[in-house]
Image (cartoon, rainbow, N blue to C red):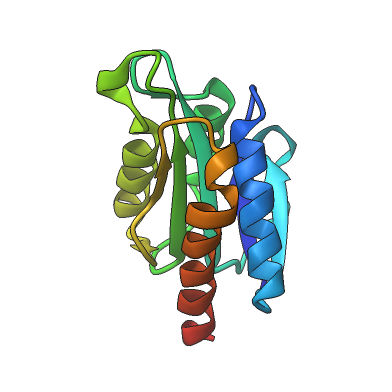
Amino acid sequence: MATTIIYSSIGGNTELVVKKVDQILCEEGVSTEIFRVENVDFRFFEKRQFWVLASPTYHQGELEKGFQNFLNSFRKLNLENNKFAVVGLGDRRYYSEYLCDSAKILEDFVSEVKGELLLPSLRIGTNPLPLLNSTVVNWSRRLANAIKSLN
């Protein structure tokens, strides 16, 4: 069964990270499907079990508006016992007290729908480029191992 990756990215950093996560999952033998949040069609989401949710943090600790709208509809699905991973980005230069709050919001969502986090969230509070081949790869491999252990 494919792991469904849903992300939001306006500046491009979250998209860079998600594409790297997708690449590593595929290299590790995990089938994936990737969707930008504005291109989601909920008809395709029945019977899914593995999810990666990724969003940047905007303003004072908020999700990007499109992702918030997505969650409002997504929570209507039965997601109980589904497995999740979360990626949250932020920028220390802006509202450092809310750094990577998107991860916390998404973690709270997983708890609300009675899902299960497979591993601690990937939080990146700086330019992700220097972390793509280290932190992101390592986290993605741990995620792949967690998913494969459940199949």
